[in-house]
Amino acid sequence: MYILGIDSTCDDSCAAIYDTERCVLLSDVVYTHTKAMQGYGGIVPELASREHVRFVPIAAQQALQKAGLTPAEIDWVAVTNRPGLVGSLIVGVAFAKSLAFGLKKPLAALDHVEAHLYSALLSSTPPPPAFPWICLVVSGGHTELFEVTGIGEHRWMGGTLDDAAGEAFDKVGKLLGFGYPAGPVIDRLVRESASAEDFTAYSFPRAKTSDLEFSFSGFKTAVLLAIQRAQPLDDAKRLGLAASAQEAILDALVTRIQAAQRRTGIQNVVVTGGVACNSRLRRKLAEAFFPEPRHCSDNAGMVASLAAHYLNAGKLRAETWDLTAMPRADWAGV
Ligand code: KG4
Ligand code: ZN
Image 1: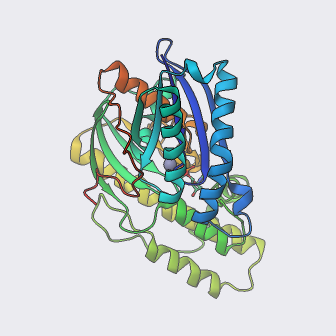
Image 2: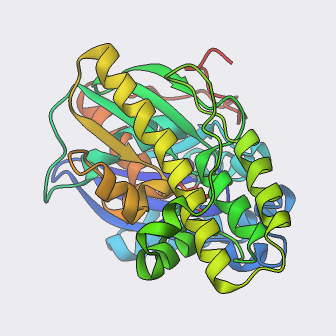
Image 3: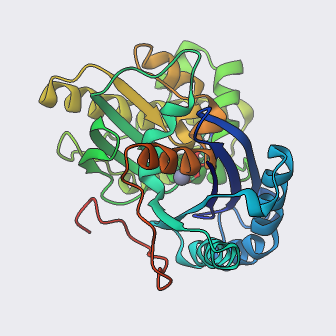
């Protein structure tokens, strides 16, 4: 069977095709809206919706073309309908519904964060560890810890009380004049230029939450104040600020993962989401499993493959035509 996955949760228009017999992705297309968002220093939700109207059909068409398939050969359409920017989700859901309706094929609706959770299953060299895992999904929109014991068997353990870690990276970068998204820029700058002193050049507070929660809003204010005090900025100060801020964010991630391991006794750790591309985080958590960067950031490959895992387990449910988009997930009880 061929599953077409669609994801339009935030500012990436994504489509992918998964072959359930050979268990491989045949195509995985991502149109990011970075260019449209330049000059705004972040995501403008209404602009993201308009970009999805342009790019979701193009991504789907290219995914089909790369897989060498016609629309009629698709057996299932799987779309993420929660959680995310609701204007963005609506575009993907409406497109997926119309396509499934026109093709007379079943439509599945998946959770975007859950798709991230299982994105590790797309990696083969090396393969992901066996269940159970502690999994951290850390992106521009989410910082969430789960205990994962099997496909569709996961328990939310804790998450951020305010901002996501990726958003904290982007805010620091915006204040330092790095453009959007700033996470990769900070990562590269620190990797290429920072010396040992840069990591402790500025001291930023670590949030006093419970050991499974995160909070970055106080940290963002502390960075803003430090930058104001450090005026006029030069490259050396920028480097120290970037390295010290990155260290504070990564420390929060590492300590919460360790707390989750202690509480559950689970050793295997999987880290995914855009921030999981961070090279220093990958070095700090040398024992953890990180999917390939292209499977960490938003993509529809993870959506199509999760649908395939559910299908193979006899658990993929066909939605009714009144399916809608939802800004929030149900796993955190929010
Ligand atoms: O998962 P993603 O592509 O989209 C969602 O937010 O769902 O994550 C994007 C986030 C952005 O905040 C970006 O700055 C951050 O991931 N990011 C990074 C790195 N690459 C992307 N943060 C730190 N280091 C990186 N190398
Ligand atoms: Zn995401």
